[in-house]
Length: 377
Image (tube, rainbow, N blue to C red; front, side):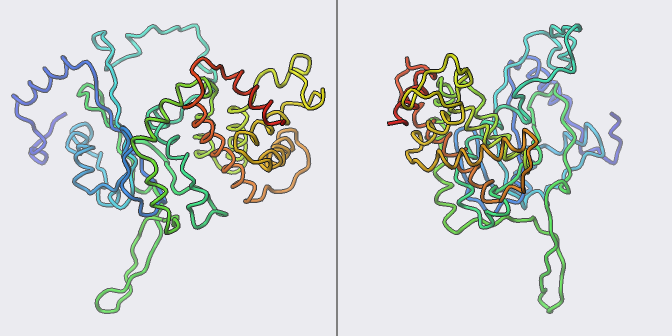
């Protein structure tokens, strides 16, 4: 790209360029920083859990992460609004990625990988992530916090924030930077202030979903220890099903899709394939043979330690079935949506505690069978 005199300050010394090229060719792994704006978030405390951090970023800190000079070198119109972005909280996720050892694969990987041109390029990949895996792991950890209890407008939205996009910065010099997002993609609202002369001044400020005053204390429960426990639990057989996928999907979805995802979290956590096989599943409850919904509800009540959880789940599952099977139904009340979210979160939270304590040799099938048996006592 021709820099010209207008952007002469973007020119790097030849020695620096040569050194960075040499380092780039020798580099065997990259550091990736995923910047996730927490849209609509209240003032959150600074939080660190593992490789993840939540904090506000000053314009200078944003510059450190993004390197706007590199962006302009790539495309002279790529400008990032650091001032407006500095008004938001950010989830910052760090990741180390090994490079492909084949020469050139870092730049044009499709030409150096084994591409099967006969495969179905329109196929649906089950449980595909919307965001990078490292980001979805961080969101999964955040979603185990009781946001539905912390928000001031719980009947409106249980979430304490939204994540509309993720911007990834890679320190690999052969990786072309992505176009920077616009600050207009986040939520703003007008606010009127009075200046020192009493004149009304209208400004744009970020939209805020306020949290309760006691929220910060509960948010700080997410730390390095709980992050380490979460990673250990995810390696357990109890999390062999797509529990994380559906919990994150519920957060990223709205309306009926959100509601269905909450219910599916519980099914993924506590359901077994044999539950749907009337001929093979063990009889229970005085030699009766109840269906899958009863079995999941019974396991849930046992896992959470309260009988009312079974009835709550069955009520929500009935609404789920009415929708899926096209039966006549009324609007789903907001308290049902919040209940579905709470049951999904508590299910994952208690299953994590179980995953950290059960013997390593115990299978998921055996654990859920025992949970059903004891839940009937």
